[in-house]
Length: 444
Image (cartoon, rainbow, N blue to C red; front, side):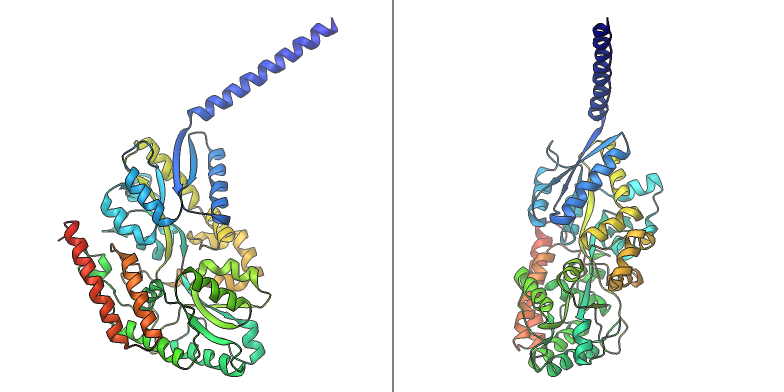
């Protein structure tokens, strides 16, 4: 009798398990799948997976399926080539320099559509970031992994050498003075400064000087038809760098990923006092040295107010080849990612800047700033910048080409070449590229 009773109980339990399991499977199967292509690796990729799991568990309607698609350039080509097929993503991440290309390819539904539909408060997101990914008053994509260039310095080294640290918003001459003192007081054992031969940094010098690189207000008022690399601000910046190179206060690490790796290694080993680079390097720098890290805003020309710099990184786009129900799910995930809490977690995990203004009040960032107050500086630079067409990025196809050309000009200038001639050569080449590209795409 007991045996029958036990068997009966076990049968009931088994039936209950099967029912619950079946319900769970049914619920999972009924969820709308949202395929999300991204290019994040390491901590950023891990955090994206975490966000996807948390979102999937938070509601029963959508299931985000994150898929890594390689580097930025590789992913953009995949996105363009698969659009309109069953293999295309519903949501995708695309790098900053591809913004105009993706926009003109007409493969995405502007996120402004969903913002209007749901009365989403875009004002909670930092305006310098949103303005970068907007056109004609419309938000075309949502900024996500975002960085800004800042100036890093070894505060411990400066104190040891008896050198006053640069101000939070330094001028060129102030940085020159600090760099020279580092070189002199260390008897040449420590180089004062490096500025990578990098087109992105060249763009930032112009942005901070409130100058447009491309006509039509950097492409915001129409398709660019020409660029100007020889503006007063651009020439001032290059003259400043060249003068410091000649005085041996700037050490030149060249260009590319190797250059950045070498300058960071030199900085962490105490052989370099200051360098300009992305705020996304903050985590690596804090973890790599016991010295006190100093950070200040991107330097500006003497006698000129800093206009603020642009951003780097990538944004999130919603494919227009998917049903509205899928697109709605993609926007729901975007909203989830952009909450103050999740943006704070994103900054802590990756070093990218939290874009939700309310993130700065989140416990996770308050704790980070308490441990490393300098980590607050890039966020302060971002929030204090008033967005305008000069510091909101260049809305133009061929940014990679532009950066290669300005990088070449910087290489020549660093070795003593005539500044205006080097910049003019690069400018002429870019204008030829623009003319050919506009003709090929029937933009004229």
